[in-house]
Length: 81
Image 1: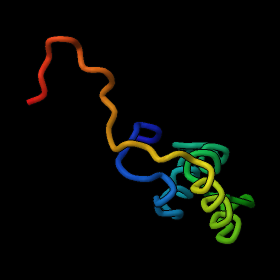
Image 2: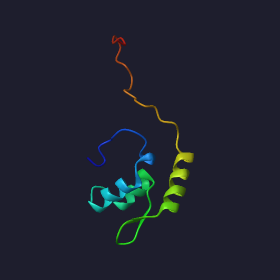
Image 3: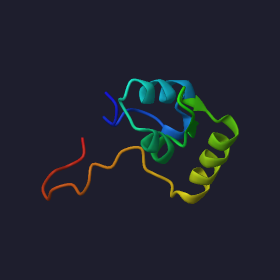
Image 4: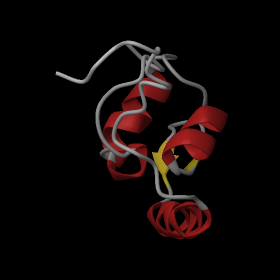
């Protein structure tokens, strides 16, 4: 489902898939831009390839490295398996 987490880097998600999510109203055009770096334009929801490339490059440059998983602090007395 849209916004349900998912696997992988959102900036590597296929731009056509993001565009289709917007067309199906699963995510907004603003979320496509802010979360996936996909810039859309026009009533036909066209992917602006150059603006998307620029947005994604800027987003990659400004974000911190994220861990694959973060389960938080381990409760005391619990050992790793």
